[in-house]
Image (cartoon, rainbow, N blue to C red; front, side):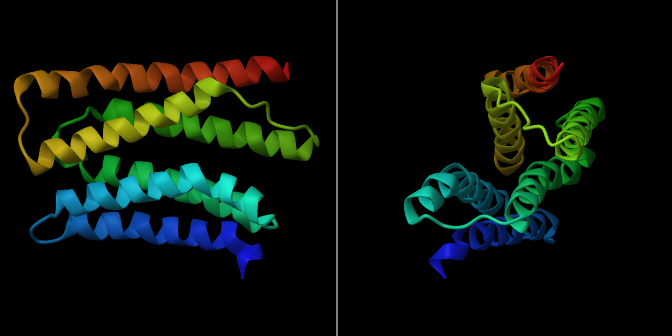
Length: 176
């Protein structure tokens, strides 16, 4: 069982993405529950690789696929479900989504060419900004925030888009 630890963690994170959707789509949305689910799932994402190495768990082809899918769903389910509240412009969600499509295409190309995708620290930072954006949006829906907090959330939008595309371009430049 411990050898399959990465797959189990990623399946739990996938379930967390759908639990987030459940909390956000309820007749009376429970934003605090959705925040906690995303927070716990993000913590699991941060720690699962380290724990898997410690347990000497095996990785197979399913684990990275499930991990990537869980990452995407945990970010985009809240972003898309909260679009009607007009907290965040649609272009921001589309820009982040297009960057992920480009990264996935680059990952597919690297696999086909038997090259390793370069690791870029800015990619982790861009992912962290996207998670911060999701938390800010859900917190704002849970409790209308002071104008300064709302402005701080609005300042994250361009940063999240800029860093996500910058990390993509840095990774691409390392391949060329």
